[in-house]
Amino acid sequence: MALSLLLITCKPSTPSTEEAAWISLFNGKDLNDWVVKIHHHDVGINFGNTFRVEDGMIKVRYDQYGDFQDQFAHLYFKQPFSHFHLVVEYRFTGELQRGAPDYTMLNSGVMYHALDPHTMLKEQDWPISVEMQFLAGLGDGQPRPTGNMCSPGTDIVYNGTLYDGHCLNSTSKTYDRDAWVRAELIVLGDSLVTHIIEGDTVLQYTHPTIGGGVVHGYDSAVWKPGTALKEGFIALQSEGQPIDFRKVELRNLAK
Image 1 (cartoon, rainbow, N blue to C red):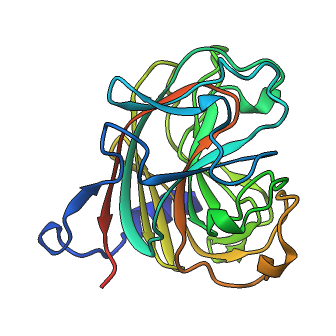
Image 2: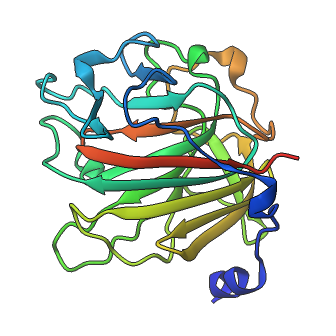
Image 3: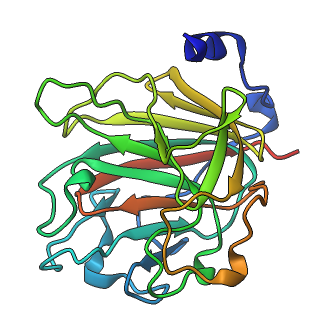
């Protein structure tokens, strides 16, 4: 009930369309504007051609992997943003890669306010960031919402209280494998964050900061709990499940 009230009464204040033009972060041809970081590999190494451009889409694939071996991967856009409206259109496809954890089945996401990928050590598993998590239904008739929040190395405030979990479910409906889903993320620095799925506002929270747990192998020099995350990099996630991204667009709301 508290979430429903929040979504009805709290609407983000953003500049008009005339004040900020949409730009395509993905040009449909190559990944020249993007930086890869894969667990167990140095930044810039696109092991196994994990991230590739085919048919005008960014595709995440594992056909050159063998066992997954926790090679969690992230594809970062080249520059950070602070206030923005992001649109990502995605679909899950194929089967979970051999050796990937069960929880990563039909699971991916887009990270935001991530620290610079060049600060990540070779054995760092996840970026310090906040994630808009994407999930698809498992075909078991059980609800599995998408557009959730997960917090690797970060904390958020939900309904006025520091949230003590790692992931927070949205109110979205369940979408199946192979269905295209339009996800929108409105981030206003370190204040209000809004998740939108297929035009419906499904989650809101505030005040992302460095903190929490989950991330391992990071450089202690960048670990400053309580530091407000006012800006950072945007990254598409790879966790062992094939996924396609056909649109990655952003409207810069910074004044």
